[in-house]
Length: 372
Image 1: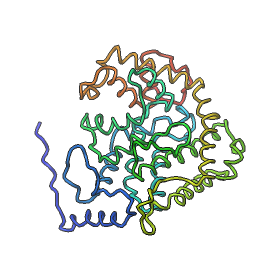
Image 2: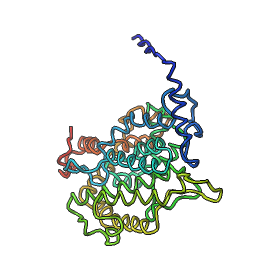
Image 3: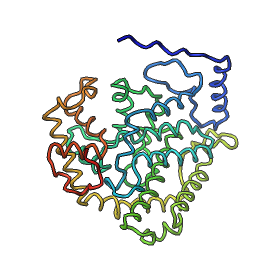
Image 4: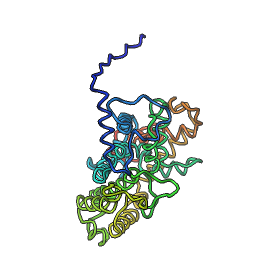
């Protein structure tokens, strides 16, 4: 079969001016902002795009991946919910990007970098959300973390093993976005993040805390008045009030990052919150762990999800020939290939595959999920 001819590309004499204009706009950003033309670069050098900055190219590459598309059928908190309005990994990702861009724009930082990181930060999430992640972490000798898997996807798995060849800044933001339990504004001083990377961490928390409250209320396991009084008094009692309070406070408390005024060598800007709002946000986060996240991990749906993940992982270890060939592109062993394949599955696909191996394993708890 003959190869199709390369499409004819007609370059307007004005095209080269587009990228110069975009980069000149970046030069107007805060002196603390990341600039695409000053990026630490890609692992493999590439010819620049005439129409996009390097961070814009990264954003576009992520959006067009299979991993990004699969986010629409991956659990956020509620596993394969029956309602149509529950948050999925895809809608969560879009909310993080929106909140992150709002903060970046207000602080005169690089919106394109924030958006690219936001679109890629959860690509490595497993089916069944943190229940699936915890189960794979227990099963794998090397452990499993969705942030590291997100990086692995963009570096080694997408494009049939070629990876996306993203810039260093986007890859750093993706792998460092997760936050341990406790104060989510605390950072590892040994791995300093760009200001845009710090925005991603905050935007991720602001997004999931608020939409998880909405989902818990929708599910009937939480009421607004159940939230700590300090949270309601400080952040507000509605979805929009809480987000507006948190985002506005982040911008005000982080104003040094905007470069508004003469930069001082004694100032190291950071993305932060005022003490009062920071306390309320951390109080809300701990409340959600105690009243929503941990209890949901003990439901019948979670138990079945863990059983499905264990069944599939063991099966693929014993029958590696059933793992698609692209997962062995870099001479991975059976365990790594099984992790990569299984973690990439949507909830629906994982349930379907488990039912083929052990009919009835889902025991009707995912009745709305198509099994064919």
